[in-house]
Length: 404
Image 1 (cartoon, rainbow, N blue to C red):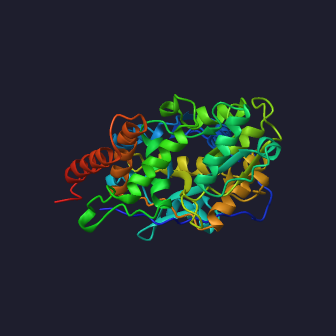
Image 2: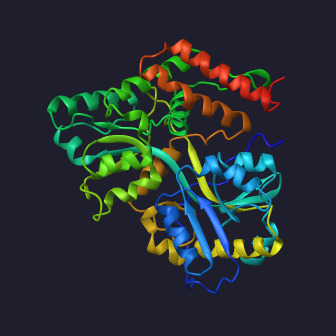
Image 3: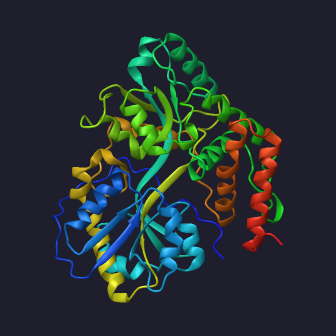
């Protein structure tokens, strides 16, 4: 049983460039992919589409569909977008295949830190690293003589000053949408407070002081957010920034570039980044490091797998990166970091941990996302909320055979 995956990539902020042609062949095998829909994936699948006979499906909720789609016989998609956490159930189900033979055939341009190895086999190709880090309106903080916050208490103090100035009613943005997003916010903050997720035999241990502090901090932050914060995902927060409605957020590195897009943003030239705030003074950034990439279905023919991997490599070429340099912190050859990449770099340098991707963690993450909102809206106490989280996890873990 796959229960844990180590982070096999590191921030690659300088890589050698080289020439790489546009699509080098005409694809004759009909192929489909399922992945997230942020800018980096648009760039990669756009490059793949140049080869023909390819249908990408971009969906921010791809993780909720992927497990069943890949388990079908044959799989509904030949190429699967995956990330640190979303690959776990696919590994557990055995619905993705080892890639080493395909890498030997088509992966000559891959970098060593792109190879995600599980038990000695390469099971995915990473294309970028991602993390949530501080993104802020430099013009507003400068005007009000506010230093970029290094802790969440400093962020709250900055938000109060901005709100009191009358510049913004809701100075903070947050990906607090009920479900996966809110669960990720809990994970980040809980780690920042030094919390431990599990005790002996996979038992959840979050109904404690760190759990209470996490909920209280999330609620304090939500007090400076638009009241509809429980429906705010990455796209909502991106639009809040672009429309000049918020001044600060712990926001995904993969979205930062969109804030400098003059076609859709009113705040071009006004955005700056920094490391994710710490939950406690002197602590590590209260966030986690992720990778995003792709893999190939097991339940397809070898001919389809060969064609799918070859096409995937066309999506990860240097020309794609050079044309979309600012869409991500790329691990692909040709990437040149810009100022917005420094938020991810500084966050990693300050010791932010890798997301603890395990089967058990996936279940607990879901429980966080399902129940944390009860405390944020005042429906339940912190202790009641944490008890509900542990109860949901325990039931699911027993069903999975993780707890006897």
